[in-house]
Length: 106
Image (cartoon, rainbow, N blue to C red; front, side, top):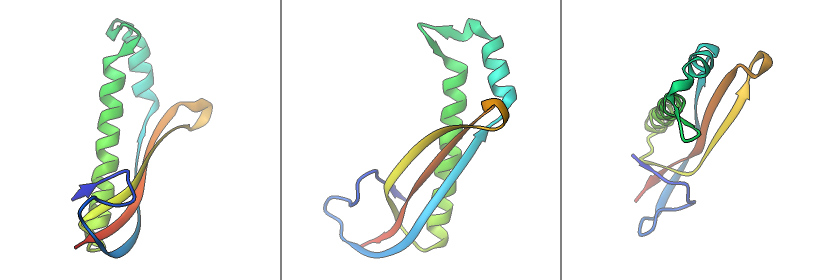
């Protein structure tokens, strides 16, 4: 599966558009409590634990769009957009949402 934020893949023609695919992952409140409690993880203004959890959520969302694209018969997802949102009561959760267009490349 080819993933791209661009609307096309250089050197490859799009033979068919299959539709929009979306993948989402939500990090719960315990993640935030654990990270703020573990302030020792913060080095130079960055939290390694927090970054690791965001990377995990991003991977889950990418896996979801890949699965949906395969179900549609696509071999690439183009025009990918990655969004991060704070959701839930009191902003206690973080959502990673990835969307793009599933296509068949010739």
